Length: 347
Image: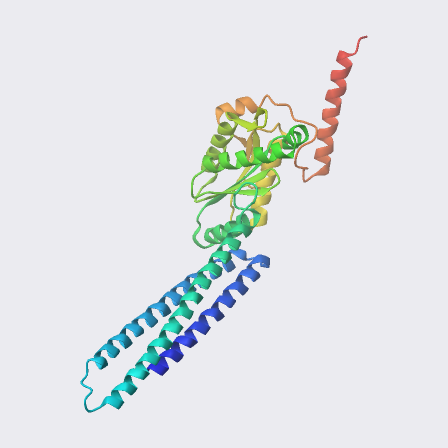
């Protein structure tokens, strides 16, 4: 390859690298609004890896070419010049121009490589922040949806089992009302870390929204998911949460489901949510498993013995699918309070 052709080729590659970077940035911008953000994220990450490889390869090519030119220059300098002084001077001049041009191109490429790395780091940071909950540091709802869709695709293709746990902190509103939202945020942060440490590294613990969390358990059937959530319930019940000036006992309720054949993500989550509501409805601080037909109480002997003594409250955190059921609960609770008041009233 001639020197001119090589320099043109390097210039084209340099322009191509900027073009590809533009495409990568465009994909990231599309990623922010697209529903299939996980797929776009992977595309952008592959693109960034390609950009790094391209920039590094170009730098190596230019460096190799400069070494070859330097070697040729040294060889020419050692040639006898008695009979061809003018020709030799001309060759030296051309070589010096090539070396200078090559050095300038290398400097430009080095600068471009630095910019590529900086912009790649910025894109990666934006991608990470778009999938992370700012308060707890856990994956957010978008990351959860992405992971769940990917896991469900694996279930439909290969039959890989999958379970999900929805978790809701009990009486969290009263914590905010009594101690303030700063204390509530601290409780959420501590709960997030405790939940993360309570499950396997391969499990995805995410913030579902508000005081709710979700755990995706790949390759896990119902009985194992039930065991895992019971351990988490017992663990959190035994730990005191620290807020300014005092400590708190915090519990949570949970709903568990294992994916069924031909089930969509929305249907899967809805079953877990129904099981969660059942846990709230029957007294909190417990877990239920939805088998596709009904929500069944699950738990260790300690969990069941403790939670069965809790009286249901009149204002569940989740409204039931059937409004009549909620009205019946409220009426029953009202009758109970009236009866207690009558018993305390002097006759």
